[in-house]
Length: 221
Ligand code: DC
Image 1 (cartoon, rainbow, N blue to C red):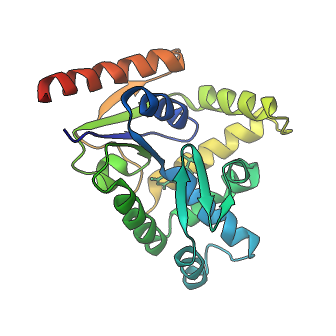
Image 2: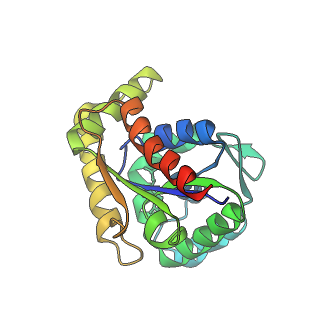
């Protein structure tokens, strides 16, 4: 039986933590598409290529060999898993992710990665574009202040010096750019199940999603 699970949601909604746990629970391949956009942005920023220089951005992205090794993102042989979470990347990634040609390249890569595997993929356009035919689609939401609080605590724990208000501003700005861009704006797929995670723990959300997956497996076995 083939299963593909799509999880879309705004910045810092807990998608990757939740998708990771579910991947282990149901033996699914986890593809974190946000990290792919982050890697593209980071490598362009390293080369000092602005998001407005679309041809150069695409040239760089075409030269990237990206793959996941368990939970780690390897790009041209370098483990970028931690580097892509830096606030400088978070502050700029939405501008790169709004480039139509860049999205086309990464969507193709994501669809190739998914291939014939059982996958769980998270991002902003998974249910609407990348895995349009996925039988299980979830749309995770939470208030901007709750998401900022979670991201703030996560960064602090890692020893990264940040201000709560800066994180909140960045999240609000990123939500705006992601949902107002011309190319595949961040919207809920009509057939996605919406889960508001405000006030819920990660494990409560995992349980809700797991319930739907278990039912699907039962019905299709
Ligand atoms: O989920 P995240 O915060 O790591 O995503 C980083 C950025 O990439 C975010 O600004 C939205 C964008 N993104 C996207 O446009 N499409 C996706 N499928 C995943 C992420």
